[in-house]
Image 1 (cartoon, rainbow, N blue to C red):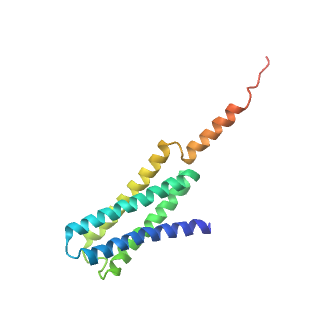
Image 2: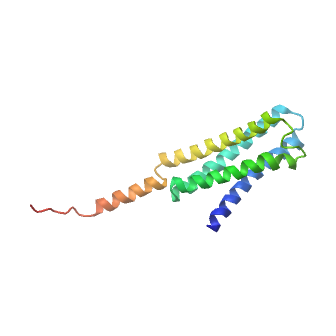
Length: 154
């Protein structure tokens, strides 16, 4: 159980670190350039999606969907709270400085990127037949095929 929460915290911290790097890059590298800030944000969301896709692939191979989906949801929830509430404070802004629309847009975009990343990771894993359920079904078929057929007398 301890390892489970450590993994959740580490991955949420990595996702938050990606956001902090994007915010600092925008702040110090492209201050005032909205087009560059949009590109940096897009790269940040792609990186977040790729990280979560790799997490879905890694956890999906060894655990059932119901077990790791809750963990990914916890990771995303912690990361989005840190990103929206703590991230702006690190670059000298208020979380609500852009207004309610910007605040909620950050949340929805983050959830969209996270959802797409997890979905792509799990769909690729399932298409390759490497997910937990496919492996269970494969083992079951091998066990059933290895047993000799019983002859029934009438």
